[in-house]
Image 1 (cartoon, one colour):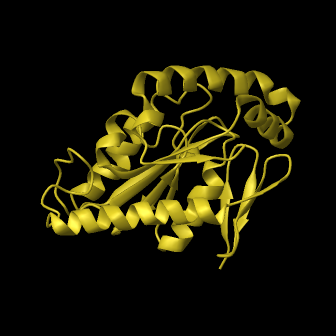
Image 2 (cartoon, rainbow, N blue to C red):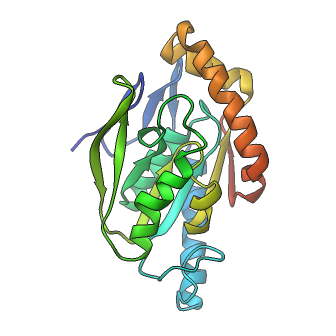
Image 3 (cartoon, rainbow, N blue to C red):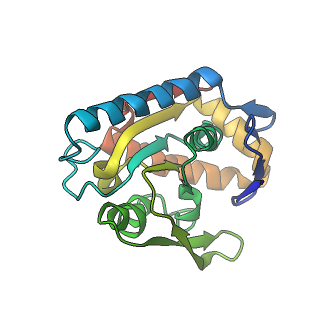
Length: 226
């Protein structure tokens, strides 16, 4: 079965094999990077097992241990988070949530971590139904509700997935990065030169959010794609 992932201006089809996404050229999930993330997941599972999961999976996690082990693939735009996150979710046979579905538009980066926490991570941690409203980038407004199944493992990919209120639910934080110029090149190759103002606007939000949160410094796994 193919999974179709839809974003503002990209469409990716995943068939359970190597994951390919176009950023002005084919980018495949690096097997070594996938293996490092999976190893971090196994270590976290082992630590939770030794502790009897009494404290939950994430450090300082105060909610009930009914919640899933959450893998967050974070980092700036154009770095390759979707490629890596999709590959990791496929290997773990885990549901995958895309932050692109939660951003309320081009100025919505700061709001999204709280939306992820309140609509998805907190309900799952309580053993309750979880669902989020999907942002329709073409219509510039909220669309249908998307349910997230109850699960033992959950992968979330996208900017801000391990930031702020979402961070306390994250067991394995992955940071994906590439040179700023390369990320911009990938983005404009995909979206077109007319999107440059949007990309620059978004990059400014990333600088503020990640700088204040020290997201990279807190990551369990660092991945560089260019």
